[in-house]
Length: 114
Length: 114
Image (cartoon, rainbow over all chains, first blue to last red; front, side):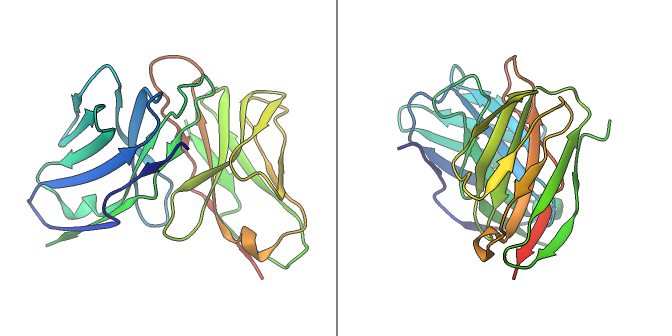
């Protein structure tokens, strides 16, 4: 069935290092992927998205990589800062339907050590 | 724009009680969603709506009802609250067309059923 999962539930990095958060998806029909950041006690916030016709997209300090061959998505955060500490979710649009529905993974908790 | 607003922020219910979680968005989005998030887990879709007067079930609709009489409002009704409905509830909205499925989230309602 459709599922979005993550390889690691927790990730601890030193401030200033780069972080890589991984995500696996299983639905070949998904053509849109998105990363959200959720700080404690808040709703998810958009970080970056990517369509399946791309394999890389960059934002400010963040890069998303998409490998459709192995159905893998990753989020790279450069020069990780304490403010990056949060839970990160990837999501896919599943069957590519028009309803805009997203299927979310369980999330990875990123902790940044000063 | 206030974005997506939710009320109340917190609520404690006794088993068997009912309540309505309110959600309002001022971005003129056609699509709206209700999710629940259990501790340490991702988001599960309860109900969604692609426009006023149209609603549909998500992954976990049992025990909930929704209505969409206006574009702005998408209330979620809990009838006969059960401990299994203890969770954080997020409302979200999105554009109905275009190149993005980005959903904008509210701050959440933390519900405890005892």
